[in-house]
Image (cartoon, rainbow, N blue to C red):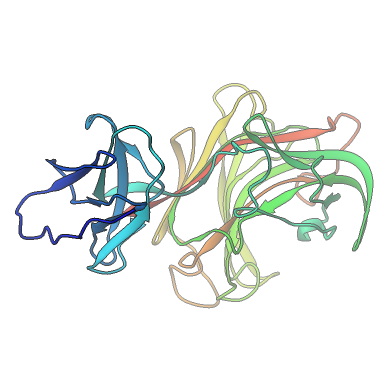
Length: 344
């Protein structure tokens, strides 16, 4: 389909939104950024290098919805994206994003299978360095999408793999090589299992060990649950020297009522330069502003990109082993995981 000529709108002195009428093009003055819409599939808009823009779509010029995620301007030339195949009259605009948390990555687990563009399964029997009892598999019995939830299920069953055998199976997924972030608001809405020896966690490790091996390059534990403490949430950082000269700082948060298994809760951190805060259901229960690394001065090691991990361990040095009271299979259910970054 023939494309209209692009126009330099910088001298018009007002913002414009272009309206796609199928075979006609119209111009409507609106507040906000300028946006050119073409009669093909490409849409261009003026963007400054380094600034962020959100493309929005409307059918009535009143209600706007996001089209994809934020676009970062790459130059002073027009940036572009591919528009959808709308059947109704469509209005587009590009809004510059500033002074707000902006969603840059998420998984709502709405598909039928785990999104492999976002998650990798760890497959091993190494015990996580904590003498854990499980074999982490990529079997659907241990990790799958079910009714809009990511299910991580620990089972009491013998499993033989390439690096050994275990009497329990479970799953551990990570975003390494698929999603790494330096600073941001990272949150997950989840329901956790409880029971002796169960150890669900949502946490982060460095994409690269810039400052040395664990824990001199850091670890951020967004939430850990020790199954015999059904109402207690743990938030921790690990840092300092390489093991065994590492240290950690963290605290506990007690739910006002019920257990972590009774209902879904939103677990989050806000991670900025020199500061990390932890919250449960938007209540901030801990803020840390002091740590160290043998590899570099503060704010190292928490000044590098980290990736996400979600897992359900069985046994280990901290929770101890399961016993006859431990319920199997045990399920960790995650409704969503979202990553925001602050746009100045």
